[in-house]
Amino acid sequence: MHRFVVNNVVLLIQYAVSALVSVLLVPHVVRAIGLAQFGTLALALSIATYGALTVQYAFQLTGPRQLMQPQPGERAGDVVSRIASAKLVLWGVVLGITAVALGITLATGARVTPAQIVILVALPLAALLNAGWQLQAAGRFVAVSLVSVVGALTALGLGFSRIDGANPASVAIASVALVCGPLIAGLGTFAVSTRMIAREGYGRLRWHAPWGTLAE
Image (cartoon, rainbow, N blue to C red; front, side):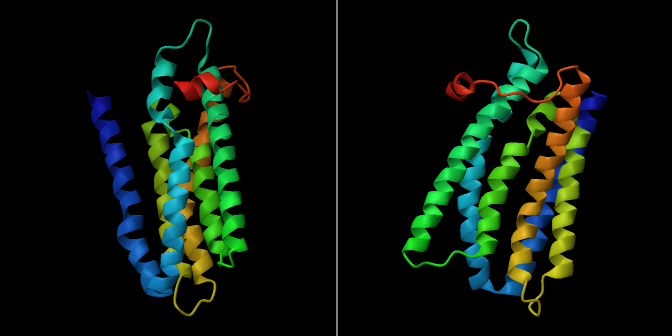
């Protein structure tokens, strides 16, 4: 019971700090760069979010079950590697579709900014790296929350210290601030995940045919 309460308190802190990005950072960015400029970033954010959801798929639901009910002779590293392989395939599909869409957009004469490209690439990449599902299944709620809080605080610090109307690079910095939270969370959970399976004697992540996992 004590662990259940602690885990829920940790999650509450994580979500509360992460919510500050939407509550505090986004209004600040809108005021600093203007509604029109923010609109271009918001469009990229919307598209990139769909890409991230595609890469994430439903592994946060199927992954923990596979860890708790492994196949005979299967280790945690096998489950993580198989899901990582499936996410890699989905990420490649998302990246390819994004590249084609950008090419068509540019061919029509429309403008695509570097700030938009940063967002379109970073969010699906963050989803590819994120292994929070594995950490939570293993009871590592503190680790998941810690990297999420660090990401959110980094975004807030970058946004409020570097984004203002007088800085010509504010739009570019805003794009980095808006994605650095998920990206740091992805990198952090990925680092903890690989360390966990290495400690179990599995070694590095390996390629596993992902088709059955995707079908499931």
